[in-house]
Amino acid sequence: MFSIGDLSRRTGVKVPTIRYYEQMGLVAAPERSEGNQRRYSRQELERLAFIRHARDLGFAVEDIRSLIELSGHPEQLCGHADRIAEEQLISVREKIAQLKRLETELERIATCCDGKTVGDCYVIRALSDHALCADEHG
Amino acid sequence: MFSIGDLSRRTGVKVPTIRYYEQMGLVAAPERSEGNQRRYSRQELERLAFIRHARDLGFAVEDIRSLIELSGHPEQLCGHADRIAEEQLISVREKIAQLKRLETELERIATCCDGKTVGDCYVIRALSDHALCADEHG
DNA sequence: GTAATTGCTCTAGTCACTAGAGCTTCAAGA
DNA sequence: TCTTGAAGCTCTAGTGACTAGAGCAATTAC
Image (tube, rainbow over all chains, first blue to last red; front, side, top):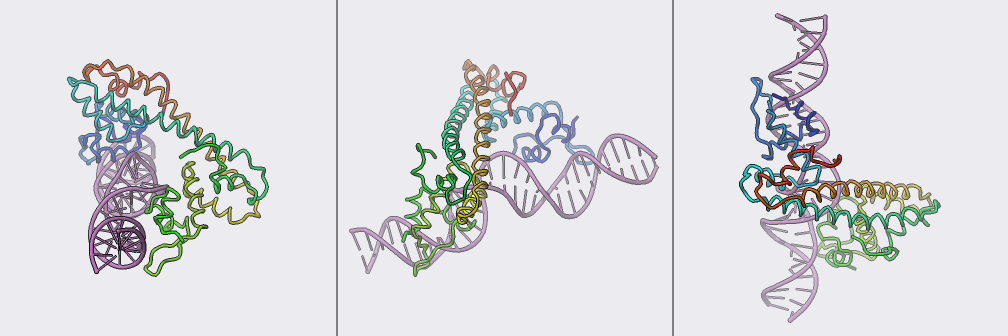
């Protein structure tokens, strides 16, 4: 049996976050000690590790809820789980592409400044005048 | 003189967001019509375009507040503005690196599924068992 | 003149937590 | 056994950057 602090240390999920996940129904309400403290089994540790891993990969809490529900029905076809993962991959790729465009422009903005006064500052001018942008972004 | 809707169309910032920026002190409260509707000048249009541009580049509202304040003091040295832009560039690069690690793992997860039942599903197994991960992430 | 659109204020909701107050329980050492 | 300090409990409210909706008033186009 693990206390909530044990669980936190083993999974890397902060204590208040574990309680938040319980409130949201992502993890079941566990047994309690005589003094009303949460006591977790290994099964609950594993579920929390699953959630942590999925959150690290950027899955939304709602997606995780679906994945957990699916994992409870091992006889079903896995197309749904597969689709959630693929959508997440697409979304990650879009974010990368967007951030790369921002990187390009920020490089231009942040490296052109000659260290003089704000009146000549390329950072400020570039932000004021969209026409200075090399290509479209945002 | 522009109405809030004109401003919204010209800058691409949504109407409630313009009012929110006013509340946050990013744009000044403008003149009002006889019927208490906001009426903006070209100067305010330009400031909002500045804000929009900076938000597109991922600057936080607090950073934008600093940049606006700096742009009102053109005699100062621009080192501060420069540093804000450079920090933003560093943060964007970190996000890109992190997302690329996620992309790699998601590719592995999302493409190995053989379309059978959830019991054999690689997506679910990969999320359950961190040891299946090729390298560290998160 | 009237109807549709746009605008107003205000409150509350989003997401995924995080922080704090004020209390109780637990575990380890004396 | 007692005590002390860490860890736990519940509850409320705050974060950032908006977004949605209610219930009105003003403006604009026909």
